[in-house]
Every structure is written in C-alpha cells, then in structure tokens.
Length: 459
Image (cartoon, rainbow, N blue to C red; front, side, top):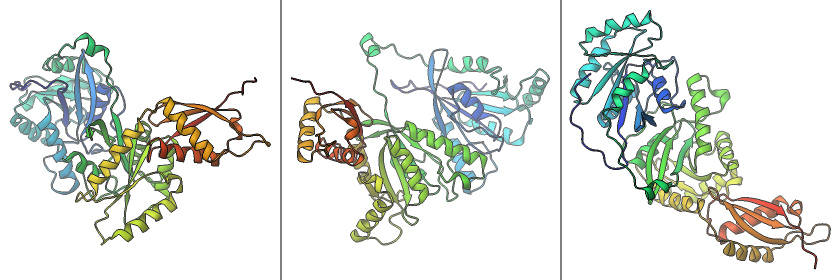
C-alpha cells in the first residue's frame, strides 16, 4: 500500500470519497454494487461497459463515504470516445481521498497494470491494491504473480462472492475521519429528501451535454455516437436554492430496435429512474421533432404524476424567429395533446442558449410540485369553480361538492367529497383540474384528483 499523504479535514456534511479504478472488465462495477448494496452499476462481460463516473453512497463499520465506479484505465487509448472515458477516470482519481486499484486474478498480469500503477504513484494519495476473482483456493495461487509489481501488500478477494471484501474495507475506512457528533435536536430533525431531476430522451438528443451545462463541468461523457451514456448518473445539484439530485440517463429507444443487451438493460434502468424522479426534463432534438417514442416515454412519466418540462434542444442550429417558436410549440402540443399544461423551453445545451430561462421555469415548477394549500383556501376556490360551471345533472339531480382537502404533495393530490362520485365524468374532472391549477398557483403542475362519496345529511 502506498503511504497515505496528509489529508485535509473535510467540511461538515462532505463525505470522504473512495474511487475504484483498474483495467476494463476486472470487476469494478461488481464490487461497486456490492458496497452500495444495490445493482446500481451495469455489470456485463463486455469490456468498457462503464463509461462515466458512477456515484453511490456506502457505509462500512459505521463510517459513511461516497463510492465512485469508473471506466477502465487504458494508457493506450487515443482520441475519440475512449479518451473521453479516460478523462472521466482521471477526474475520479483527482477528487478521491482513497483509491482502490483492482487487478484481474483470473486474466493475470497485464502491461497496462504496470503503467496504471506508475500513474497512481504520482497521485500522492493512499492506494490499496486488490486482486479480484480469486474465489477458490486454487485460484488464490495466482496472487503471487502480482508481487512482481513491487507492491508491499495485495488483498485477495472475490467481489462477486464477497470473499476478502471485509479485510480490505476495514483497512480503507480506518483512513476516513470520524463523523462529528450531532446534538439531540439536530438528530431528531429529519431533513426532507432532495428533489430528483431526471433528464431523459432519445439517444443523441443532447441529454449529457445538458447535464454538463447545468453542473458547470463534464459530468457525463459526450460523444456523437448514440448510446454513449449507459448508467443512470446521480449528481447533487441546487436549483434556485432547492437541494436536488440531477440524473442523466441512457437514451430510450423502442425495445424492438435494441440489439445490444447492455443498452437494453440501460433502457430498463432509465425507466426506473423516471419512477423516482420528481421533475422529468425530456430533451427533444429540434431537427427530429416529436416522435412516437417521445410520446410513449412522456406518457409513461405523465401517468406516474411526474412534473414535466419539454426541452427542445439544438434550437440554435437553423435560423429561428418568434414565429418559428410559436409554430413549433403548437406542433409539439398537437402531437402531445395530453401535455397541454407542460411548459416548452427552446434551448441549446451546447452554447447555453435558453438554459437559464429553462431553469427558472423548472424552479417554479418544482416549488409548485411540493406546495401545500390550506383547506380554507382550497374550499373557497372549489366553490367558485363549481359555481361558475356546475357538473352535469345525474338522473335529473344535481351533483353536490361538499368540501375538499389536500392529501399529498409531489404531485399535489386533492380529495373532494361529493354526493355521487360516479356521476362526475372525465370531462368535468379535467375542468376541475385545469381550474384548480390556475386558481391555486399550481401552474404547469400535474394534479391528482380523487372523489369520495358523502351522503347528504337529512334535516
């Protein structure tokens, strides 16, 4: 193990970072998933599956830390996508407090390993060296080959089966600082979970470029090759004072057109990320327009009550004017009629055009998405809405709305008590939602509406 360099004390709330590095296909993502306790990173026999830095919160022996999975180190990568992957790995090494270098005990020693170790010695950080895929006593004999690298200590392990993981992790976390003790009042206060902003869309629409633009640094590998992003990548982000998690996802195309097994798994994971998202920013290529696949993805998010924002990207390529904007917006709503309440932003993720305006809209949308309406204000507006346009008669009898109450947020959810819920048709439900959205300050926000029966009391 390389002697640890003096470390600066972390600011309160900042977790120490452990980066897992090594050649492609040595088992980095398998170990990452084991330590974070879920299948967050895609694992496949194909080398080079992981391209971006993948972050996950982990805990060992009571110490919490941030774990980073990286693409494979390759000193021979020259230009193109491979070089961008190497830049991501070097960034992970630069920000890490401790580095775990993984070697392939099954494949044996490789010249790339020697080059990588020389680079890590220059990092002047504590580095632990582990030989993976040693899951039997016979295979553990392969460990001695790696001592030719001149390393003081090697840790044998099997990330897939968990063998030897405890020994090396106990050594690693001993270098992490102890967490400061919180007072009783702070311990009792549970912070509200940060909002999740998910960026989705078809391949090569500009999702990763937009992610990098919002964060101000290259978080995701950007390349003209469709399907570059494979994992769903989480990054802490603050939007107009709101703590958020920004998630870049793999491009989603129709399953019938997906031949690559890795890409198919990426799409499935992207859909699961939509489920946990609060705000879904759907990126559409301005040149391609709205496709059937866009409509299917957006319908999936809409049915789950997600706040939605449509970002028409690459708007700066052809010359545009205000008439073009209105005509394009009308075309979008024509194809996505069920999203008439959703805002449309025209941007260029590459140049930054329109991005600030889009963020302002997103901030207002998220605040409305978690807004709480008082019962008195809700019922005052409800009576005004119903009086302006009463519900159709039910067998000659009027449908009476007694009162309503808000029963949830994210999205705003309301329960209205009426004498005959079944008599309120879908058209009148849409009228109620539209009017409530305007009168309660819930602009562009999805609203869930439930009707419950309540019998009229006899005098």
